[in-house]
Amino acid sequence: MRVFVDANVLFSAADPASATRILLEALFSHATVVINEHVWEEARRNIELKRPSLAKRLEKLKPDLQFSSGQTMVENSQLPDKDQPVLNGAVASGCSHLWTGDKRHFGHLYGKTVQGTRIVPATVLADELIRQGWL
Image 1: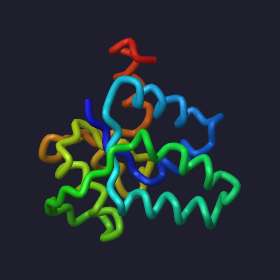
Image 2 (image 1 turned 30 degrees about the horizontal axis):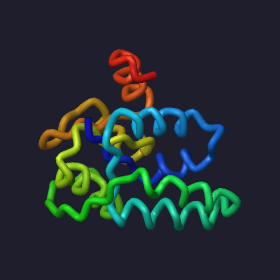
Image 3 (image 1 turned 135 degrees about the vertical axis):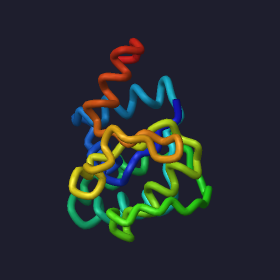
Image 4 (image 1 turned 180 degrees about the vertical axis):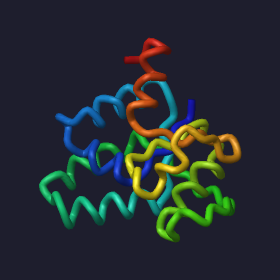
């Protein structure tokens, strides 16, 4: 399983007491967790602005993340320009899943597969991990 994670996932996972962190750590043990520079910079920027006390904890996640520089163009006119690199990165990286908590922008894609990548919220991903015995 290759899971591309959105910046909002990294933002939440920077808090070691969060459920998102628990789920991410399960993925680190059993899957490949992928991001791109766009996602990393967005997560870092948001942590610095909103929760600077967690900046060092975000940095501690970095060694367990696989950075992808894959490029592709997936046209989805319903996604804002700032979110297009997230979907493009997940598809270009050959990820089985794109995990995002951004229901406002990605909600219309939840449960759908775009060029081989299934877009899921945390609850769906957690259910899959439970079924596989990883949680």
